[in-house]
Amino acid sequence: MLIQDLGWDAYFEALWRENSEDGCVPARVVSQQRGLWRVAGDFEECWAEPSGKFRKESEAGGDWPAVGDWLSVERRPEKQSALIHQVLARRTRFVRKVAGKQIAEQVIVANIDVALIVAALDGDFNVRRIERYLAQCWESGARPAIVLNKADACPESRELAAETERIAMGAPIFLISAKTGEGLDLLVASFRKGQTIVLLGSSGVGKSTLVNRLLQEERQTTHAVRASDSRGRHTTTSRELFLMPGGAMIIDTPGLRELQLWNAAEGLEESFADVDQLRSQCRFTDCQHQQEPGCAVEAAIRAGTLDADRLESWRKLQREQEFLARKVDPEIGAAQKKRIKISMRQVRRNYQERDKGKN
Image (tube, rainbow, N blue to C red; front, side, top):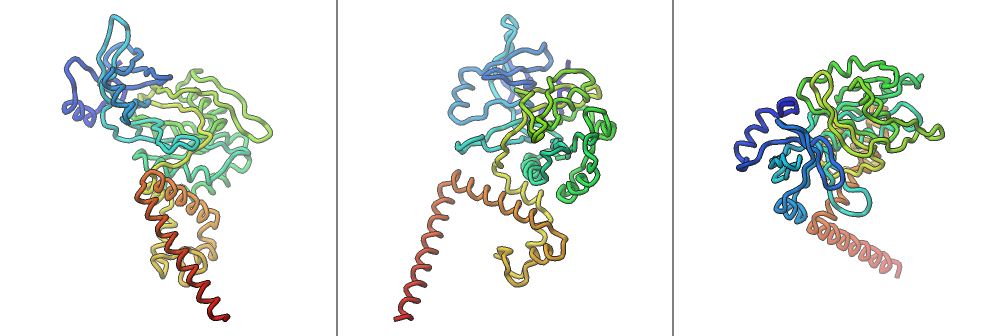
């Protein structure tokens, strides 16, 4: 296999000229498992581990490699392995806040061209979840597309596709069945040779079944979802890059039970462009869309051109971003506390003035 088959192009070639090290060659991460990375390039695919210097820099806060990354590696043919010396600058990356209470980002995949948000048209279908994925996808720099799977098992598939289109903000929507092959021709026709495509979504939406269909062979294990709530188990346990017959690459990822946004301000603007446009038409620039006069957002809700649930979804995601910003940047958190103190002082003064009036 040649590195051009793995997506190497003029962009990465230019990076390589500026950053290459003697004795190193470019390689792409094709899978990742507990401190080891599987890499491929103009050589036989092998496992790679970080060099001492790279490990020290990464443990001090640098970036560990992710599937899709391009690396500078030193080959060790005698050990059938390689040493990682550097991660080339990423063109795009899909991240999230790490699960749990820790405030840190997690890079899921890197250097992707298209992010396919896979949602199943069963009991677990949720447009609010799709909105969340769209925001982070727009932020990643990749082009998002929405894949509505299991159309064969959903009599209301067309209606749900129309509901999804109202929140897609121009992202293409593919109505498919990975089980029967319905709609896959249109999806495959959208792929281009050399593209890197990632599948994102919750457990049980059918990503592994879709990968098998796209690869035209059984490469990923699949399991049925629970009949009671349409929830699935993790059948994919690691991220892995596969080369499809047409020359595009697909990255399968484990189902994300939790997607907390990370630094997705621009992604939210793109994903909620309709809400932002309405906000710009409000009479007051600081309108909170809560019964203020001249509020274009509330007028749109009354007119039925904006869903009240979509506005609440926007508010929820904005609150998440504000909370994250306060945790990540102590100055923002301090400023927020100062504003709260000033506000509480004013509340106390109002009560004091009211009590004086009673006396």
